[in-house]
Image (cartoon, rainbow, N blue to C red; front, side):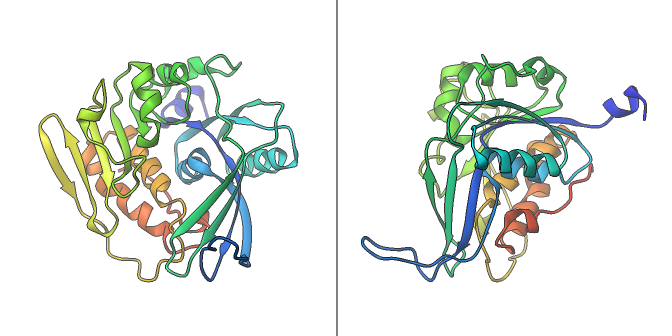
Length: 284
């Protein structure tokens, strides 16, 4: 394949944390003083960056992950697993234990997460190929450094998770899309909550679909048919965000990109491990 043919592919970046996640089922989330047993446990590279990267790697785009890794066995496990998913990894190493998570999935599929330590994020002063972002068709940002977010703005489309509202405000840049969940207090917001409002604010609402707020008003998009029994909700939101980023990079308008991304988020609900439910991506 020639260089021109390679560049004809979409190029998408994910900037953010990848955590060592152990996930399993519990009969109920423990109350104070209780002990619960984790059933069918498995581990995988999760977190906002890890899940989004896994979804984007299931497509025909050239995917770049900008992240940070610790200096222990968990970090080595994460690096090996992420590399095996495809894509290109740009990681800085910190002299610290890698972040671990315990995700407990209740019988109704809802997940409760315990994070061990602080997530490790890449920063603009890390020796990573930040100039590459200027050649990307889209970047999905779920890190914390405002300066790194300014570098991500060099991409043709910039999608930022709503949980990084503080970093977006501090960066002073305008995102093309901010995406989050209306049910999550960290993410629920309106355009008026942003000093520099994004061009579109997308908030998912589960079985009710979701809404897109722009300066022109609010429009809604429908949810796909119910997957039936929910195995686990872990990773559904990050999978939706990654798929929406892909379809924006492929040239779809925001509303159409949300419609195409919704089945990807819903598919994850059928599996305990989100990677097992993620659907392939292909340009429209």
